[in-house]
Amino acid sequence: MAASARRMAVFDLDDTLVRGDSFGQFTRGLLFHQRWRAAVPLVLAPLLAPMLFLPPTRRVAITGFLWLASAGLSEAQFTVLAEQFAAIHAQKRITVALDRLHHHLAAGDRVIIVTACADRSPPPSAPTWAWARWRW
Image (cartoon, rainbow, N blue to C red; front, top):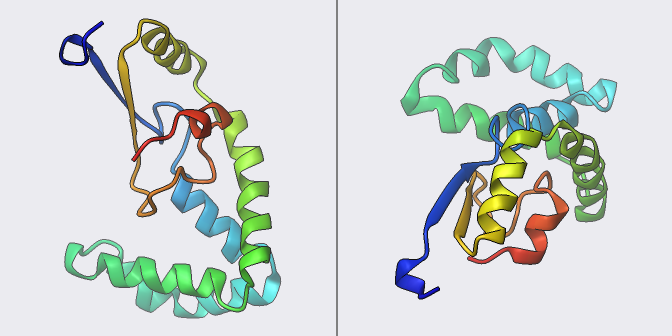
């Protein structure tokens, strides 16, 4: 099939291919995997939490929570935690949506998986089959 004649299918990762907000769940998991790490965000929550609801300050709040969640972790520790999260989160797949995605791939359609991930690589929770076909 010519590239111009190929159909395109777009799937959102969160709540379409897998249940839940991957980034939010991963960040919460980082925040609460150690007691001391959970204490600081709880103290700062009265300041940061209201900022989540205001678009101009949302990014600052998210950055604050993410920094608190990951401060002091080495890259290796962060990677291990991300891989552990991915293994669990990938089990929350939505089968009917994945079946449709595989149908589009088998038909030769161009398939795009969208996510809010800022990185140019698949997020840790992307299903393993996505890594083999990932294109930027």
